[in-house]
Length: 276
Length: 276
Image (cartoon, each protein chain N blue to C red):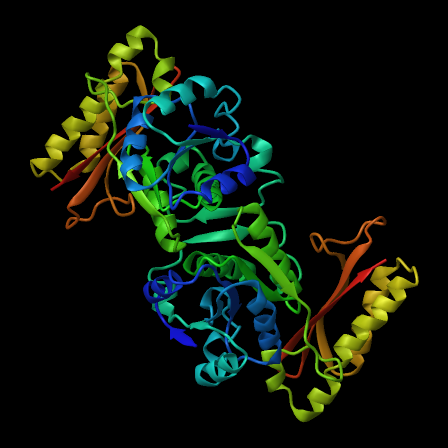
């Protein structure tokens, strides 16, 4: 496996392979990331994992500086799973000058995660576009746990005519249902035991929706209350249509239930796609 | 020469060439465009000229609908100069859905041409990025007559890490000094005789700056008055530094003098680079 830090080295290396598939990450690699690599490997001649903690997608309170950097352990895990190249640029390589030109994902950047984290999706879209331009992959793999991010990147690829296939991989879960996330390591043992409730609550909402209820607002309020009773501070539990994450119309059948809530310090995200 | 209308056909055709160089245009081809093609040809295995009148860069008063469309004549001229591919997508091909994701060129989009035409450079940056993603050229050629546009696209290429070399070609002028432009055809014979004054005024400012005067505001006001006396309606005549088109500092030596003014109906642009 190659560990590459600069765009010049990366482009030089990639000249010798017919094509590649990219898995963009912020590092702190866990089983969820490894499954993204497994999705990527059969789809190209070379699997590239980028590791870059992107300041542009963090808000002032988002603790960019405290985000875990574990490059050596990440590389060991990625090598064991068959990754070919780790591209780990530093900040001066990714942002050699102030990033005044950005991709603005209007229409979706102000709702849900975008409402809680202003500017977040602009930062995500911009860094992913830059990584695409640096790596020039034929495809890129993202995890559905960050559902709104997936939609932003799919829409960006389509609207900007990017020559990159966007592949979305299913969320990887612990045995008790908790979606894997770098943030889980900040849960205390008690919180870790409580954490699977988020996924269970989404399942309960899904079951109710599947039985035909359209009283989404009531379902969302009940789910929120249930989490609050168990010590969570929910930002939203909401039923949306998949195409644009707006409120479903009566004839929408492709839905997703999205949840975000703090449990102690960490803020956990999860979602569940359903078809009615 | 191939005339191609869809992205699918274009990508299929370009698979058979090792690389290409793109000249993005809005058609209505004149000698200035042909010189861009001459710049492009030796730089790649295949020269692609795109012809697309981009609604996104027109303001509500900018008369998008009346912009001249002369595809057949354009193709004849381009074929005669050795162009290999004309890519002429229609609007549904370039914008199959509302373009909600855009490139925002902050810092420069609100000054000079951007002040006169709000949203113009966002539209230019977005369409050029899309054309780059469709054509995947190794280089692209733009004319310096649209100086601010050149700076926007150079900065976009650098800040978004585009794998495209941006080549800027010198402005082509008529024998009397008038910069070639599609807009010149709207000048009456009397206006056409008057039109070279814009270039002459820029030269006068340049001469004064070269002799060491730093009273740019006075020079700009005098130049504006001279144009007004001859029936022009100037938007700006201004001395700027080249890097970001801001007011020059005393130690800036790479300058450009930019002018925009209406003469009758058409609005003419010109500029002159100087080093002091």
